[in-house]
Length: 145
Image 1 (cartoon, rainbow, N blue to C red):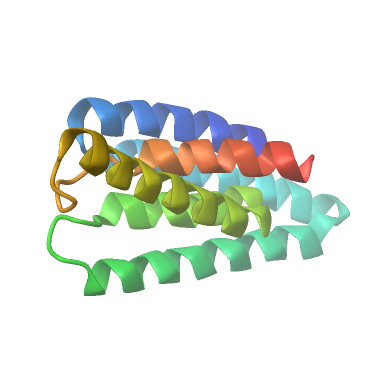
Image 2 (image 1 turned 180 degrees about the horizontal axis):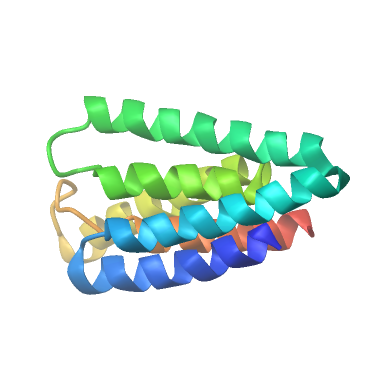
């Protein structure tokens, strides 16, 4: 159930990132809260180990995102991207690691492709959340859970 809420939330966040190039905290907060409530329900109904795995994956991906944001040039990787990476880990658990890797890979391929085709500079920013959302959808489909 947490996966469904996470994927739906990612869809909304991706659309907002495409439209405004901003990932609003109010939307991210609702997504985190909903996911945490579902994980708490899982934990109290006998799935504490699985819920803990989701929390660990969320913390790990948030930390990786924060580290990337610290070493990236200004404006290249924002706080919204970091929070979305944490949300993906929280909602998808271990599959979230594959999801973020797939999303980052697709974003990189897009940037290189538009450089080759249209000579758009490699440093031009792109909205990352749509690629993370696509990676999450693909990872869930491939993992089959």
